[in-house]
Picture 1 (cartoon, helix red, strand yellow):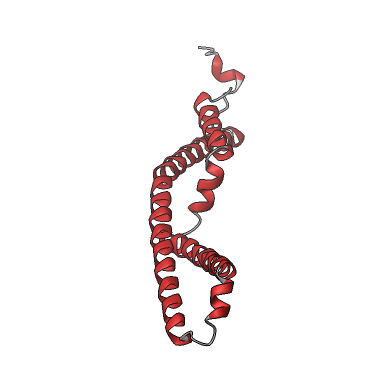
Picture 2 (spheres, rainbow, N blue to C red):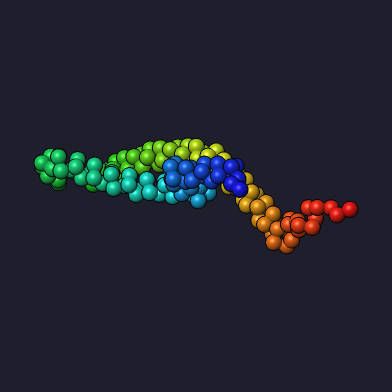
Length: 152
């Protein structure tokens, strides 16, 4: 006999796993702090490359002015300004990354709790069925033909 609740739970779990569950189950593999730190590190690397590209474009576009004033440039002052701009640029992106990934993790939590709850319910159904099957195999749940009729 088909257990309708079991089929319904299995269908819900499968739909979740094949749709938004793919991403959400990968997110929940991490602790919140580790998930945020990992993505902040990735953001820092990407922001560094972006800053270098932007700085390179700036230098390329202003190459004539830079070459004209090459002997008059205070390199220490330029390095300080570039360093300050980089720190501000990186801090902004890290703050945005922290906010985005903390919110993303918190949004996933209720769905994962519901998914876990459904898995536990499905597990209880399987345990109940297994218990019933083991009783039947042991002979507890099977009635013999003689028990059906009383010969009083």
